[in-house]
Image (cartoon, rainbow, N blue to C red):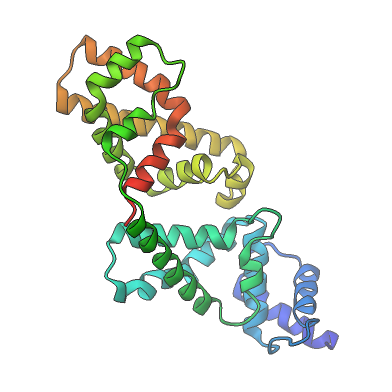
Length: 275
């Protein structure tokens, strides 16, 4: 490609996302890479604009991720409108699509880099959203919900002592209901952080890059999310069972298990609430 044309494409992309930190040389190299295949896409401004945003998202640039959410992921509810899904399911699909675009899959780079540069990223997001929703619906159709007792039973480990086993039995149903409701009542960011870290295995460093903050901030967020989850569970149990020293002792033991079992518990809730 002529150097002048390449420079013009970079200028258009820079104007589209002025707050996204991507070096011009890096964008130029990405455009050149797109054109080196057997059947290259059309050379358009949209190609350069999408590529610049994708490069920023892949490296965890906070401004790029915000633009992706506002300019591309906003299409998810529209794509799923005809399916008449609950609002919570639509939000789960949106979060799943976001993860698919931004998180690497093993040794593979984030998919946003592969999807971008074709000038039709919004359309691909729509298709991905529909496929993701169908996968969730199919999963829900073939998996039976886990009973509330099974959710609470995840607190127990082979080395659990007799006292904990007794408390687990006594408060099993109340805890299961309270914990499940507490997960649903978490702020969206808190629920996503817990889900990504404990279920998805996303590292603290990657979470920090995704949200454009320091690793220490993510550590504080996760600690606060766990605390909020237990506090909501505790409050719901007290509202259901009343107060008292015995319940407080039970809650203290439950919290000690919750700290090491939150991933398994969240997994149970996710399956039990499969659409």
